[in-house]
Image 1 (cartoon, one colour):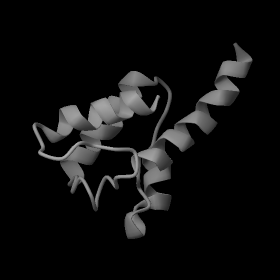
Image 2: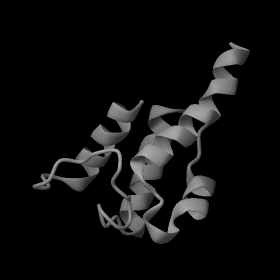
Image 3: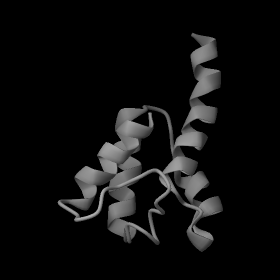
Image 4: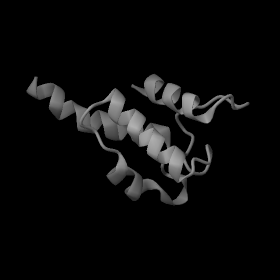
Length: 86
């Protein structure tokens, strides 16, 4: 899951010089603006239908807590009950 989220960010970030890692913040490290964030949310929803990260982002966007690792953890918690349902 983490690799897919990093790959999504790499595709949105273009040919950035530094590698993208899970501990990077969407807004602080990657400097995603509102348009990039919408593209990120849309990309996540395409990868994981039925998942919305907007609530996660609202809770974590301050002080750089909007890391890719945090997003992956949220996705894992969200998707685990769905997987259990079959």
